[in-house]
Length: 116
Image 1 (tube, rainbow, N blue to C red):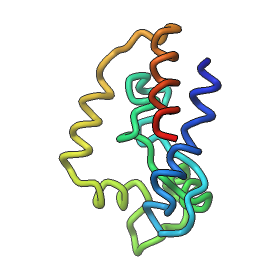
Image 2 (image 1 turned 90 degrees about the vertical axis):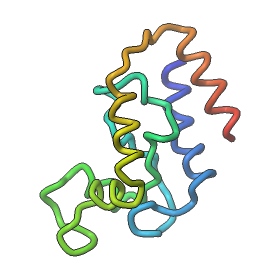
Image 3 (image 1 turned 180 degrees about the vertical axis):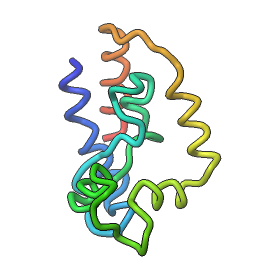
């Protein structure tokens, strides 16, 4: 069930946000702003999923690589676009603990499928 949910993230983001939030190229991947390993609560939350092209996705995972706008990296661009209220909200949500049982994955699957 977890794998089904994980596989739905990118199709959902591509449908809802066809362009990379960082550079404007076509979306190719859904990136978790707060990593899946840091927050099960945000794993399937649309507010935490960032539409990125492959190039920007590589850059966000390599903060020491070339930036796309002056000295800003992709994380900074996303944060600047979405604002401090968004960041503070998801940062708070990332601290919430959720039980990742079958019910969690069933609800997550229903939620993601409803967005397609």
